Length: 114
Image (tube, rainbow, N blue to C red; front, side):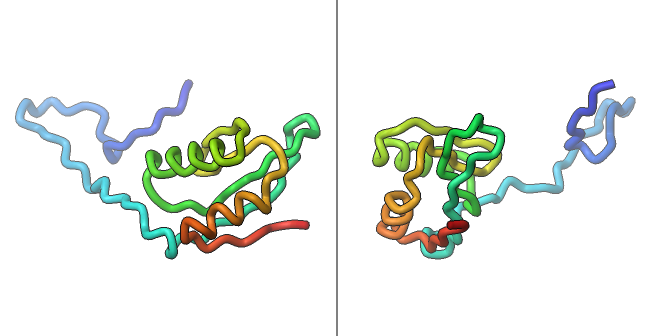
């Protein structure tokens, strides 16, 4: 059996023709200002066949804002990368450059690891 996300609070089916599901969770996720973000930058080699990637974590906000930040970092570093599961992955070791870029944008940034 496959497990599915049931976002309807356990309601699968209703025989009531007038039933309307009311979602208690409002989609009010907004991205805080840059100076309220606490980002972490680290070098990661785990499960990547020994290849290094720069990992940026700690972003709070909408997925579209995260994608926009990832795109900006990839273009400024001139390399590829991706945005997965709330994290930005930039190919290669660009920790110092990314920290400078994020600080110039107004983010609070911490370097994690060596």
